[in-house]
Amino acid sequence: MRNFHFWPIFLTILMTGFQNTQAASKASSDSSKTECLGRTVFETREDITWHLLDERWDYSDGTGLGSYSPDINLADKQLSYGSDPSDNAFHLVTIDVTPKTTIDTFNKLVRRHSHGSLEAKKRVIQGEINEISSEITEELSKSNQAKHQVLSKKNKDLNASLERLDKVSSELVLLPALIDQFEEQGRPTDKLVAELKAYQKEFDSYPTDELYAEQSSFDFGMPDAFGVRHPDKLIVLLWRDEHIYRFAFGQQSDYSEHRSSFEKLLPAARDLLARFRTRAEFEIPKETGFCLPFGFIADDGKAHYSITMAWHPTDNPNLLYSLSLSDDIGKALNLLPVLTTPIMGSPFPSAGEIQTFGPSKVQIGSRTGIMGGKYYKPTDPQGGETEATERFVMTAGLANKGYEPSMVLKAQNYASTQVRSFEQSKEDFLNILKSFRLQPGMDKLTGK
Image (spheres, rainbow, N blue to C red):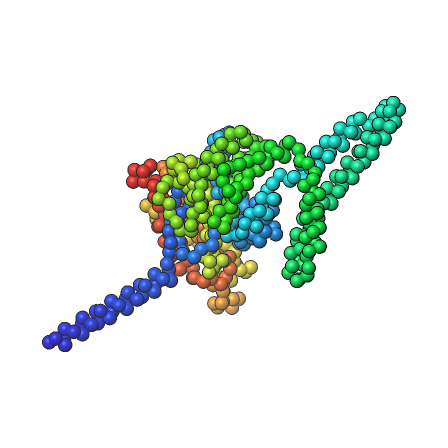
């Protein structure tokens, strides 16, 4: 009798162990993490790569910072926060973050963001030329020939100084690259380094003007911080935890009629920077605030914001997710056009299976949104299956309600060969949608 009871128990234990092993295996292959963006948290793949740079960083050429492709449109990408104190209809700041990089890259970007000291030095020389030119008249030539000759020579020397300054500035740009090239080739660089020091010393000997001093004199009371003033905006670079954070305060578009007041921007910028800190990937702050990739701004949960950011699974760079979040309904108004976005497919669209699904209701956190998309699978001209896998695009979203933001999530593949099938990617997509919720700390404001 004991043996009779033993086998069912043994088989139960064996099956339970097998099921647990299967569950553990599935959990390890589909492991997810909680990420934070804006005032929202959601579940995503554990290994993702954020698309952090775009064409706005075109001055970063030569720094080793490259942008990913495919990517969302420049006009769509943004990470904007707060309200411009000059006009609340505009955002206070637009923020960009680099991938992990070095302090040397930060210093290069500081130089490229700086108001060119070259221009300031040339303004000094040009000002003297203009002043002397106004004195060198035909009248002076007749009344005081000697003075006319002295001023003419000085004017000639000043113009030569302008040309020399351009020459010195060019050498300061070219020589570092040449030194790097020599070092890579194992050639001696002592002579080039000495030339570079001499040119730098000569360049530094030219004075700058008062405008340059005013534009460059910003102390934010923190290390590795750089600020530069423009007539109606302020750019700040921070070097923190191997990332560069670029804060562009004020109106950034030259095509806008709005112009920010720099006097109002500066105290608002100091206040925001005092509330900013870095954030590890997948770290979810417990206090109320605003999340950005690798960063966090503590606040009362009420500042306006508008975000469109993208990422891809690290093992599948051809599958692009883009997420738009905003406390303004404007982001949700983009939903209907993207539901009908054409997908990249075969040049022979009739040779394949095309499906359009939605719009239909879908669960997004605790709310109901809409979802739609297109699916395409090619076939060869004889009607058989091809080796290529599916192409697809999926979009879902909803409008803002109270502290719940407008949200649009889109996933699109940009190559035929995919790590996961369409059905698996769709399941991932739906799981992300279901996981959306307000970040910790917002419950105090919502009463939930």
